[in-house]
Amino acid sequence: MGFDVVISGGRVLDGTGAPPYRADVAIAGDRIAAVGRLDGAQAETVIDAAGRFVTPGFVDCHVHGDAAVFDPAVQRAALRQGVTTFVLGQDGLSFAPGSAETVAYAARYFAAVNGPIPGRAPSGEAQEPPAGSPRGPGGQEVPAGGPLTVGDLLGSYDRAVALNTAYLLPHGTIRYDVMGPSSEPASPGDLAAMVRRVERGLSEGAAGLSSGLEYLPGRYASAEELAVLCEPLGGLPYVTHMRAYGARAGVGMAEVVEIAGRSKAAVHVSHLHGPADVLLPLVDDALAGDVDLTFDTYPYLRGNSILAMYVLPPSVPGAEPGRALEMIASDELDGWWPALAETWPRLTVSHAPGMEWAEGLTMVAAAEQAGVGPAELCRRLLTETRLEAGVVFARPDEGPEGEESVRRMLRHPSHTGGSDGIYVGGHPHPRGFGAFARFLGRHVRELGDWTWQQAVVHLAGHPARRFGLSDRGLLRAGSAADVVVFDPSAVGDRATYADPRVLATGVDDVLVSGVRVLAGGELTGSTPGRALRP
Image 1 (cartoon, rainbow, N blue to C red):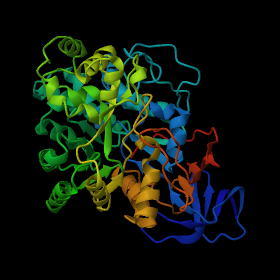
Image 2 (tube, rainbow, N blue to C red):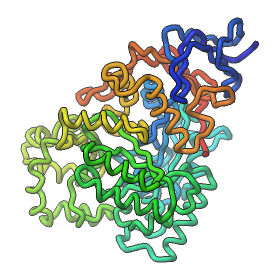
Image 3 (cartoon, one colour):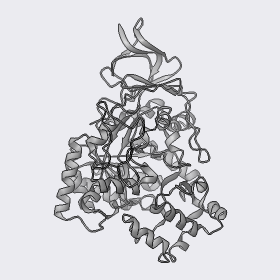
Image 4 (cartoon, rainbow, N blue to C red):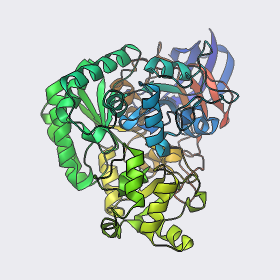
């Protein structure tokens, strides 16, 4: 028997939920050729997996790697956790589909989350592409300056990076492309134009539709508008950053259920964090009502987002930066800032272009260093970064009760893993560098929240099925050869809030589409990652 790769002597966790079993895994081309006892099998490359688990590659259901995936450091951080696929286009805002103006808006508004699109300046205008700019297999670059389609974006990822990518159609980007920053309800003509964009994006390979209902312009959408846009999904999921979380999650979940009922779409709730006593009954009630619902969480108690979303009142038109900055610079918000007195100690600056000295400091500490109050420091961050500042924020429920809620949420059978990784800024949240390793090291080995086989279902098999990636997420003959080899005694996260970019340990060998992309914990330089179309 001759193969390209044989992974020998490991214990296989195949993604079905079956207990680990001793087997060899043989790969021919980009497919798994055989799983079993393959004594005497010959291969160009043999990986000794003795004492280690062999699993399908993990799917990060919620990650903001839309631009960062081109960065080898980000690829390495993901692969060192066993992640082989990023699901992009999250929270209703990304780079496609849209006109040049729309692309510029999405890049600017979500700059602290997604970063700038390669090949374009922050304004969205064309710039000289850097050496090694992203290209697909035929040399396809991200089009510079003009409109951007889903096909363009997927083509720029395909075989240009070490990871696979799947892409969700971002509702906020589509709405802006049709209606600009308007807060008005969508007219029948607007809805028809948005539906056409959804249909085209799906035909070009999108894996679902996402919304961000605390961001702009997604906040302006009604349940009716979202349901209409979900109708063409044909079994692919509507993925939502809900309108309300935490103690008010009932409001957000009621809207999710309404959208599912109107459109008959499957739904997936992003980063469903908060009190488990509140959230789990909402999930179970939806499931009992025949809603096809899944959700993702990450194993941390703090969040990370744009400062403007977290601190500005709804009266500030964040989708219109010029007007928003005028209001912030004036005295119009003087009556608002005192209401945030208890918020400032919970915020740590993660991204502040031009004010990098503040990154890693709490708002209170940064204000003291600047010799001003926290409200004035916040005003400066917003104005000097032109709303681009990002923060890591501690939730009010941080503590033992919060961790217990995280544990209860991830044990639910509808759960899938997502890092919500953000790689922008000098001091990002550690979740992008440690979430999946933390699932394995802390929640399996240390706490026993999952068995090893359950972990692989939650992190590989289940999410691959949810996003229509039918040949991923399982180790069986004929499946795509995305394979991870890790040491169960060593796998774990090391990134912390104080030092967020430290790489995880325990995952040393990873293959994507049959090609070794991580060997001995280091990138090989190969870029076989596919743009996955469901």
